[in-house]
Image 1: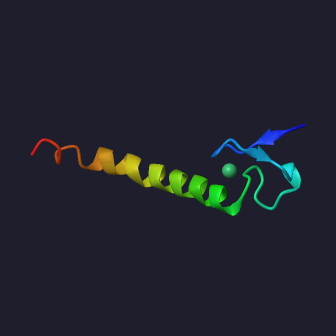
Image 2: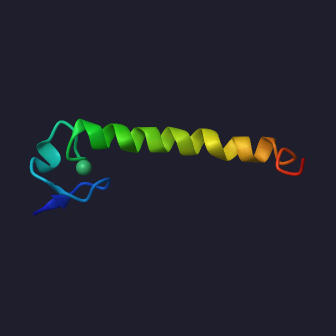
Length: 55
Ligand SMILES: [Zn+2]
């Protein structure tokens, strides 16, 4: 069964046994982690400062 990296959509050669599963590499693992953290911090910021865009 082939698995594909959720970040770059390349085939994950090592599959579930890979050190970076379900990602194909450490790079994609970090990209996903960074994106998750960015989204986590970005969402409350938009709710806390709605007036910034008004001024
Ligand atoms: Zn990848």
